[in-house]
Image (cartoon, rainbow, N blue to C red; front, side, top):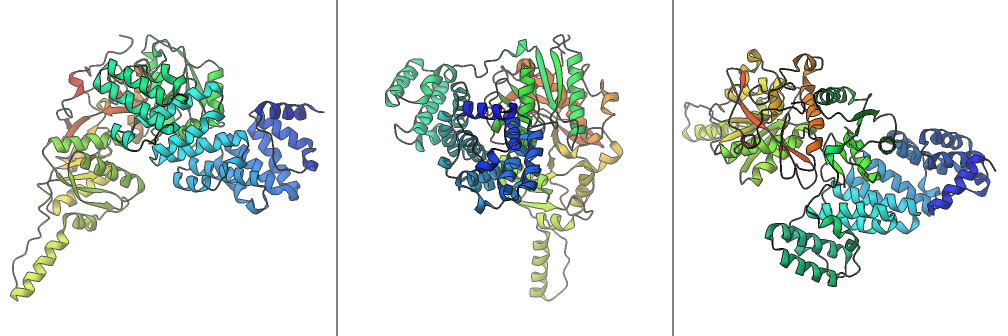
Length: 625
């Protein structure tokens, strides 16, 4: 019996999941099958997929099964496009019950990697879990939890993780319990109380315990808390959270000592659509690193070279204490979905509703900017606004953030219009937004009633007191003059950071005069000074396209905040991208500065909501100082 066949049987024995492929005995005797399966168990997915593809072409009677195996290998390798190609070539009606479950599971994983959570749920809901082997059951409940989390269904996500728990190794169950607690911690005490199933339901026990701990933080009555905790233990005597008390009842949410990091692994792409952005971040990171007294070992990994889970495990095995990256949302999702994070990960992007133990998310999310510009407008006394944003997906996402933030502060959105970002004439959406058509309609009606010519001046709607304009600098320079032409002269205009190119340009930005926007302090010499300021790094920043300029600041902060990660919940850090804190989802939030275009130049206003910079000095003191 050759080496690959021995390995195959050995791994099947260890996994207890079986290595059932639904292949006939004739093909189980095929050495190539054993070779490919052994390669899969060893993590050599690229080599395994080449064998499965060859078998799919040569063994027509088993073509569906080999395409299924090839799809699984491609998914593990991180090539979901190729996996989808093989899935599309499979006839599900010719598969066994177990294979059909795998077919739908792999399809759901591909959908999740594309951000299609609803589609993934539909694919998962037709899978009977009993038809799956042990390994695939774990993937099934992980995928089910993740898909529900992506669309904000936290209770359904938690239920899936409760089903997942007994399938995991003891060491992995604690991480799963931590994720359950973090997800439920996002719910309000009222929601936890109203939707709690009765005892001895496991989900009900988690919800009762989470509500108890949330109440403890607000009441500060330790005697009452201990009494209620004793009651909880009596009501839920066999609950899995009993083994988790030491973790969840601790006041410290982070157990790592970030001051003693000795090796950092950066997982960033060297190729593909994010390669140039990654290079800018890397340069900012290295600039901060070179000025620091503490210089842990740095190791760089190409996040596009293999499956992101494999790269993470490689970095851990080579001694990393902390991971910085990945950058793409797909890689962050895949890593969180398929890996127990044994060491902390500082991901450089944000996936909404994604919560995982040891995962921090840090990026230039538009959530922070839209929240702050909304607060600025409300603090200026406005309550009724209009929104004008690009009709593309990014523009509408920003418009939704603006609307949500505005309504949460008690404001009212009277109307929202989309514009074509590739156009030059924005008169139609502006007319619709300002209700100028209604003004013309009233004029025509009065003219018919009087039967004579009367003087007419278009009037915009009078029920609005501010406009939110979401547009990049180049487009805004065309839109804003047209807004003024259509009688929005007296309406203050507020905008997210995209309206500012990042460098003063008086001759171009004169058309943006009086617009207020919020942005990162690093772009303003008065707000961020020192050896890592934009002025100091001017020659470095000019090596990259203007659209990437803010990513240098992200790179700077992604190094400088490392030793502050375990304190950010209570002690914000004044960084290049803003005053940084961490919220209950372990997302690093940014408090920005606000400015107003005056004579074509951005001039800083007072900081939003009595700036945290007043309390945490923005005057930089580098680690080297």
